[in-house]
Length: 268
Image (tube, rainbow, N blue to C red):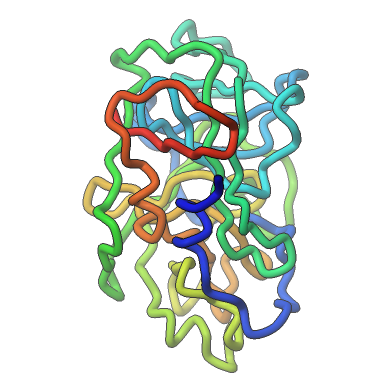
């Protein structure tokens, strides 16, 4: 049954966004201390090409964006990484077992852009790999609150090479009202999304950061989802609001799925 997912994702976008949903966009950021952001993972093709981020909620489960779904047989999850171009000896590479995208995910509106990945084997939690905390169900995050988004995505809005090392940037939360204004996304931000960015632009997530975590007060409140370009003053970055889906992360220490559609999202 899809009951858990469906009940929690009932809002609809007013119209099809004209924005570039494909530009799931770290611009204007910096390289953090190596291995200081231990909960982030790189989602890669089997040819070891990074294409999305994600984060660990326990050693068996990763959260990412639903639009990062390229098929369970076509990806691997890498934890403990910092530089994608250098083997550091801290990496753990694990194949996915089951992909559980939200059944109400809409590719046009990007509503409910969230997916769980059940791993074939657990990550070993250590000084380089750890889990992150989640907000309570429906927990609000105040406008102006500074949050951290991290990833291996483009560092320049116009593209160019993917950076080899992890990047991070601090961004303020933008109110849904402002983000939904006619000067910005014109009503295409649903209740399952949140926005973050500076009014002057210049800092943002960018392509390759998709699925990565937006962390506020030590908890993941957002999943990098979509936007219009990167670091545009008029268009903040758009994130899936994790607190809207918190109830489905409900079964402590549950590691199995009865069916692929049961969605027993798990806590450590």
